[in-house]
Image 1 (cartoon, rainbow, N blue to C red):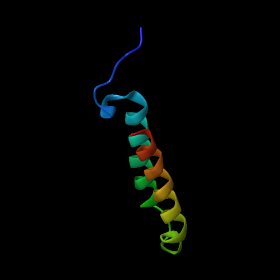
Image 2 (image 1 turned 180 degrees about the vertical axis):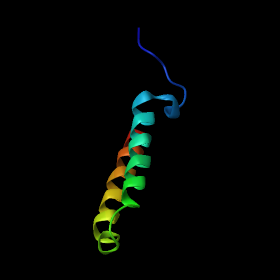
Image 3 (image 1 turned 90 degrees about the horizontal axis):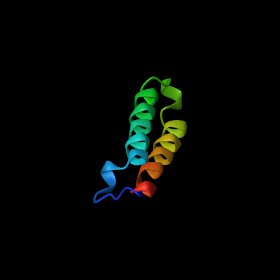
Image 4 (image 1 turned 120 degrees about the vertical axis):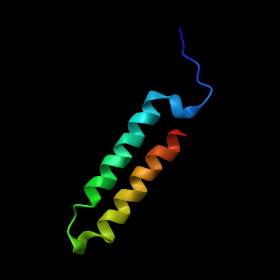
Length: 55
C-alpha cells in the first residue's frame, strides 16, 4: 500500500537530505580559510538545492 503524506517534512528522503545538509555545513566549518569562499559556496548551493528540489 502506498503511504500518503500531508506534509513533505515527514518524507524519509527529505529528512535524509536535510541531515546531509547539516553534515555538509559542519564539514565546511573545518575547511581551511583559503577554501572558505570558492569551494564552500558551491557546496552550500548544491546541498541547498538538494533539499529544495525534494520539497
